[in-house]
Structures are given as structure tokens and as C-alpha cells.
Image (cartoon, rainbow, N blue to C red; front, side, top):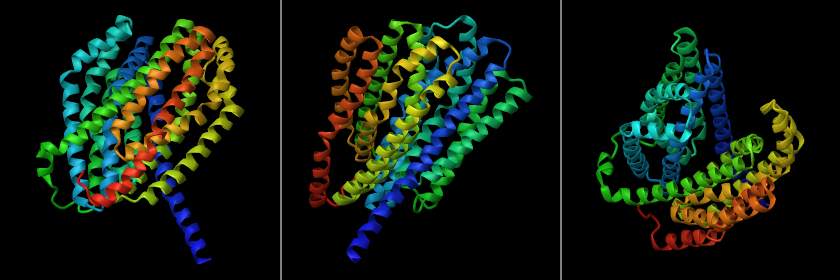
Amino acid sequence: MAQGGATELSRAHWHRRVWKIALPIMLSNLTLPIVGAVDTAMAGHLPGPEYLGGVGVAVLIFSLTFFTFNFLRLSTTGYTAQALGRGDPGELKSVALRAAVLALAVALALVVLQQPILWLSLTLVEASPEVSAQAALYFDIRIWSAPAVMGNFVIMGVLIGMQKASHALAIQIVIAATNVALDLLFVLEFGWDVPGLAAATVAADYLGLIVGIVVLLFVIPGGRTAWPLAAARQLAAYRPLLALNRDLLIRTSILSLAFAFFVSLSARIGDVTLAANEVLMMFLTFASFALDGFANACEAIVGEAYGKRDRRALRQAVGVSTIWAGLAAALCCLVFALFGELIINGMTDVEEVRETARVYLPYVVLMPLAGVWSFQLDGIFIGATRGRDLRNAMLISVVIFLPVIIGLWYALGNHGLWLALHVLFVARALTLWVRYPRLVADVESQAMCDPKPPI
């Protein structure tokens, strides 16, 4: 009886740990569309469509540019979680310092290259001169938030890796609330228009950075004592971090290109189909708010177990987080099935787009269940800092995806595009799943050979 009780207590412990990380991250994700909606509303009330168009173009540029470097958050989470598992505060500080140096280098590169980035982006978008002018106004100010954004990636990575997701949520709330308040002040009160929107975001990002640094000083054990600054100068120690970030950059870029190819083929079918697919893709964004929470929880808990070289804890972390992720995916499917048409109607007033979106809604209803496994496996392999596996799995998946989407597009039109997207998610999951046994075996073998390997 006692043994059974201990087992039940252990299971309850794992469930609490997963939710302690996943729920704050889900709530944190909700702050992003709120800020975006306020920015859009502010720009939409300025006198002329070029303001809204310019802000939209500039925000798209930054979304793509900054998202490309989200690998800083991912890699920092993995190495932080492993350092936590080893129980070495010195390693926690070293990981944070090296990640911060890399983030600063990326930010400086973006600032130095700001004009080529702006020129290339506006050339590709081909917006009107009026829209391009407003986009440039926004860009020229917002680009100076790059150091803060990259620094916040590192801070979020450390906090999630240390399983302090509630602290990460608090920082995101500070950033979002400040952004909204300054939007209202700069645009409505001061009349700064588009530059005001950009300045509000810059100020909010830097405030978030300052708050985040203070939080880290209190959260990291010994954070208010001396930091091992020499670790930031040990060039050899950057090699695994750079290798992981390189692999994650390749993986993220390939995934972005795959979705861009989906959008490109949608456009070739017609404007209505493109618009309908854009509406339906928002369903995936909504689902990712929930699925990301459990994937991030998986990153942190798996990383800790991997750092401890604890095979049993690794399996328990994977099992519990995957159960909840699967249930969340099923709930998303149910919500989309019951309320999908209402969501479509709320996102567009164009009846032709609504009708087209309804035709392909069943594919989106099933998408969370098709995609949840790749989300989870991404989290597992990020926590274990297995960048090569993530990169290779994505390469193989896209090699499978490209001929499939082209063939199905020719044969079935837009039905084929959505079927191919399912294939991409399944391929991502399978190509990582075949590597999972090796990951587990490595935990056991490394525990026997080197119980405390260096990061």
C-alpha cells in the first residue's frame, strides 16, 4: 500500500511540475496578440491607410527577423536546465553569461546591418512609396530594441530552464502593459503617430530587460554574489553553444521556408484561397499557445533530467508532459470543430473567404493532433540540447514534404496543400521519434562514464 501511495504521490508531483511551467507560458503567449491588437488599433485610427500598412509591414519585418534568432532562447533553456540538473550554480551563471555575449553580438550585427535589412525587406514586399515611408519610420526606431529583445530571449531561456515560468510571465506582463500604456501616451496624447508606436515598443523592451536582469539576480543561486566573468572569455566553451545555435537556426529557417512555400502555392491558386488559408493558419497559432506551454515544460524538465543523467526521471517527464499535451491538442480539436465557423466569421467579413475557409476547416480541426507530437519531441530534444538531431530531422522532413506538397497541389489543389501540411507535421515527429531511443540510451551511458560532464 505504501508503495502504491508513493507511486501516486510521484505522479501527482510530475503533473504539478508540468502545469507549474506550462500554464504561465500559455498565459504569457496571450500577451502577444493583445499588444499586436493595440498597435493595429492605434495605427488604424491615424489619418490614412498608409499608417496601418506601414506599421503592418514593419512589424512583419521584425517578426521574421527576431523570430529567426529565437534559437537564443531555445539553446539557453536547454543548457540552463541541464546545469540545474547537475546542481551547479556556477554553471548556471556561466551559461547565462555566454548566452548574453552571443545575444549582444547578434544585436550589434542587426543594428550595424539595419539599412541593408530595411532595403532588402521593402524590396521584397514591394509596398507603395507611402507605406514604405511609414514602415521605414517605424523600422529606424524599433531596430534599436534589438539588444533588449535578444537579451530578453536569454532571460526567458534561463527562467524557463530553471522552471521559473511564473517569473517569465511577470516580465512579459510588464513588457505588454508598458507597451500598451506608452502606445496610448505617445500616439493619443503626444501625437507622435508611427514613431510613437515604435518608441513605445523600444521602451517596453528595455524596461523588460532591466526587470529581467534584476529577477535573474534573485532567482539564480548566488546571483547577487560574484559572477564568473572569466567564463565569458573562454572561447572554447562557446563551441557547443555555437554549434547548437547553428543547428537550431538551420532548423528554424527550413521550417519557415516550408510554411512560406505553402503560402506561395496558396497564392497561385487565387486571392480568395490565399486569404482563406491565412485565416485558417490563425487556428494553428491559437493551438500553439497551448501546445507551446507543454513543449516548453518538456524542455525544462527533460533538460534537468538529462543534466542529472536520470533515465527514469527523463521517461517520467516525457510521459506526463506528453499526456497533457495530447489532451490539450484533443481539446483544441474539439473547440475548432464546435466553434470553427464562428471563429472564421469573426476573423473576416468577406463572405467568399468565409465560404472557402469552411471547406478546408476539417483539415485544421485535425491539425493539433497531427502536430502535437512534433511540438513535444522538439521540446525533448531542445532540453537535451540535441541540435544535430533537430536539424537533420527537419532536413529529412522537408525533403519529404516538398515533392509531396507539389504533387498534391497539382492533383488536389488546396486540399492537397493541407494534406501536405499534415505530412510535414507527421514527418517531423517520426524523424525525431526514431532518434529518441538513442537519446535515452545516451543518458544512461553518460551517467556511467561521466556523472558530471562539463557544459
